[in-house]
Length: 413
Image (cartoon, rainbow, N blue to C red):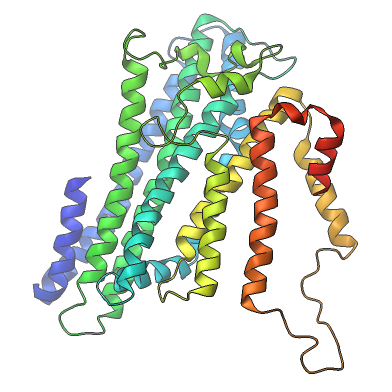
């Protein structure tokens, strides 16, 4: 990883000092590197096929249980995490707007007064990527632990061990994906900055180096998180009380009825940032609140530094938290709650209540104008506060929520 960063920085410097034939040789090396990516991919596929079909599991019924369990883990339990990652890839790699935003933030780091906004934005962007990585790991981990009604929670010892290893590996792999996606976006943005050139003479190396440093910080944070999970899984129980056995990674009976799985989660160390930060109930609410706050700052203050990337990542963290809780409820009750939400959204759309493209026609010159920015921000803050407050209360399951009238009032609001 560090060697790759050193090579990237050397290539940035070579753009200014190397002769033409060296740049051409570097281009050929880059093409060869892309072709050699297929070698480890084929090796990993071979290892996976051997692990699934040959080693350890000889009985055909056990192999059938293993295949069904792997399909459940890799495609069903992780469906919302995969959807969030697909959105992240589409917004950061498929579209080039986020690369332009990253270049704009990097250019503002050493420009006054943009630096007052650029430095906090850059640090908050890295923190948001770490939160996205943690959320992908967290909701994959919790969804795999939740047992489904009517599904056997006990398998043959070999199958149970392999499914536990697959669930643990899926959570860790999906948790590391956001950091590499953002690192790749940073590398592409650095390339674009090199192609575009500098505005000022002698300063065109600043933005590429800063972008590479941002990508490296994201990857190092993801690596540190993954290393911490490996240490927690390998440590003995007296030293690490939160280290779970392999069998508890998939269909954990402690999460099943009549146990209260929310209490189980609350008492375990599922915390962001060194085990002391917000947990599954607080992190999505805080992320959405920060996204709304940054949108208000961008509208009112006009800082001159684009905030779109950090708003996108924080919004994905918030939505992933919502759909993560929804997946837990769907898995526990075996009810398609997402389908209910889609039906409600469709009914609201067909009734015209969500149409924001209607132009008001009025006789006065100012009658059809939008409200002032202050009123728009105030209405946004009020609606977001109502939504986030209700989510906070419901997630913490306060005692005064036991009455159906209170719940109905929150739902109507």
